Image (cartoon, rainbow, N blue to C red; front, side, top):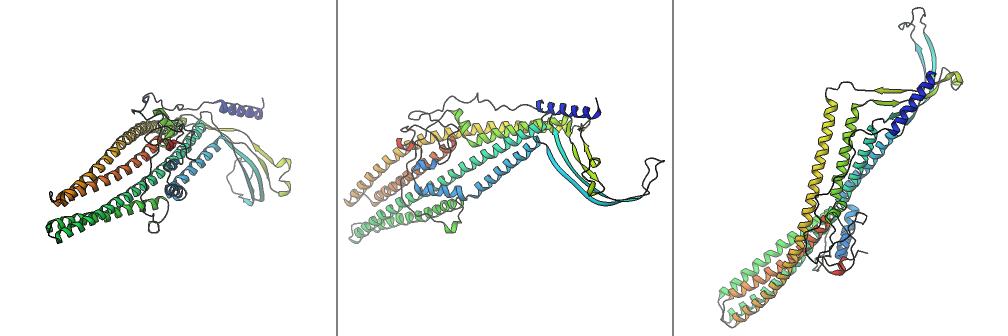
Length: 492
């Protein structure tokens, strides 16, 4: 066989081996979820939903039926800078995947040269019988070259696998950033509305205390009571007025946080104060294993494992030789007029091979480093799953406990109002001191504020549970899970 035919046959054989070759390093398999519990530790009326990963995780906040919250959430999605940074990282991950995938294809380039050069007449001889001569000549060259790594041992394949897993991890990180952003907006908004309700409670209590102060003052002027009653009521009123300033300060903090989240300077942002009662939606639960498909932080941790596993293969590939196919084809002449003539044709076709024979343990250390990195991502994945299960159980417990606490707080308010009415009657009848009236007023105020705080916490726990479950869901209308039946229907 002629040398040219031999080279072509050898190159073809190497390319065939590259196509059929196996990748070094372990193949990735997603971690098993054998230790996942079969169900959540819940009681009726909780029921299972269908939170498959194909369902949208998006506009879950629309289930609270608050147009102001809907507007703020959309502004956050449009203008939040943390989300913009996550989008940029996702674009980087996809670009890196495109760059890595290009390694599977040959790199084709064109080279050209045009110049005039003088060759030294005193250059070293290669043959004593051939005299040197100084020449001046033109040099024109035009060529096509190809560079292709024959991936016999899967280094390029593992590189693409790692880049693909990293891109998917960036996508999951983006989803997680968006979920956390929407939850932060909702949390601050519900805290602000809870503060509005508390302000209303305190302001109504102040009005009641002012009327009581007028009554105590009138009785004192008539000589029916001492100045102590007036002083005690005035002290209570002054203490309650202080609460207004503290609540307004806290409201401003929530308002400023919302401004930053939606990408608006805090000094130019304001939300009108209003007392509204927001009903939390009914939240259906899926199986614990469904959570692994839903939560973007779990998905991100799993994709990090896949990327780390690919790094083991990339590091292991350094043990094996690399083969580069580098054919060239072109023309070279001393004159432009003869550049494309047959005698000016030049070409080469062959394969180069390189193999590290001694690295002083560098390759082994690289493999050990990659394996340790994989073990770290595995531990992080397991921690993320355990944290996710903890958060869901915390949310379930919180919903059940706060629903019970709200019902009890409403009973306490009814009782406190009866106590205040009795204390006023006893005081006006002269059979009790004014201290009983003040104590009853303070108890009613505390109970009303406690109910407002419990309602706010109930909304926050709903947001926490939705976030813990991975976002929105698809559930049958009428499912009763810690809310009203119509609240469980999908948003329009």
